[in-house]
Amino acid sequence: MNRRLVFTRSSCPITNSLDIIIGDKWTMLIVRDLVLGKERYQEFLSSPEKIATNILADRLKRLQSANIVVKQAYQYNPIRYKYNLTGKGKELRTVLQNLALWGLKNFPGTRTVPSARNQK
Amino acid sequence: MNRRLVFTRSSCPITNSLDIIIGDKWTMLIVRDLVLGKERYQEFLSSPEKIATNILADRLKRLQSANIVVKQAYQYNPIRYKYNLTGKGKELRTVLQNLALWGLKNFPGTRTVPSARNQK
Image 1 (cartoon, chains in turn cyan, yellow):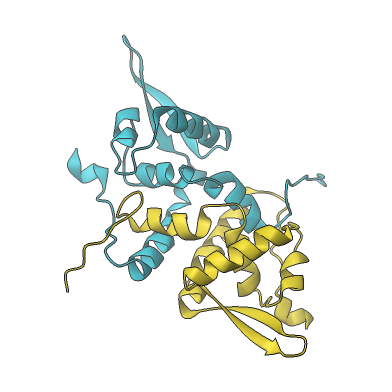
Image 2 (image 1 turned 45 degrees about the vertical axis):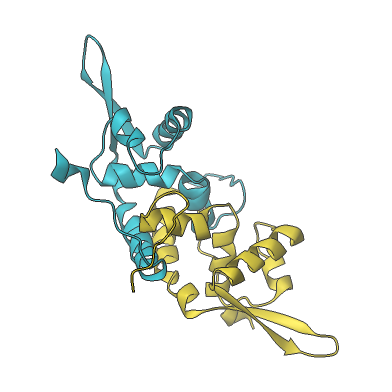
């Protein structure tokens, strides 16, 4: 198969990754929360960065479009949704871990956010 | 020493890393070019993403302020400068490598940019 591919800025894999997941100040923090085990709207809103609800809704939609996040109903009447990383999304864990290591080393006083799984 | 530290958004090391280096569409691409061996203004401008000169100048200044890049004169009359990564900047290589691996896997048709060192 010889598909012709069109890239917005270039065919560099770093550029394309940045444009999808790191192109704004919020997307990667939602991925961080998902890696840490957060699944629900209120859990993302409770993170220390205080994301606004409209930004959260928009970025979750973008992450679904990019096949990084999947949305599933976990309750009916009233319907409630939870969000999880896809396989593609889970592969971002290594990028986040390296960012965390770099940040811990270079920004004195930073602390990793505890996993939400331990708090449930 | 018990310094009181003030963070813009939170004390999370990922948040602070994102705010410095990945908060916009260009900064990390300049770091990529530096990792690949580019040193001079014209070399950064020649990258396929076609960064504008005013954005390049601004982001190089920000990277110097963050102690990620160092600027040195390599010629006088007329004076010419080159840019290199500091130790802190070089430590971002792992983050970039992981982003490149994720991008190569998830964006069909992407190709890593060749090292500038091989072309000199």
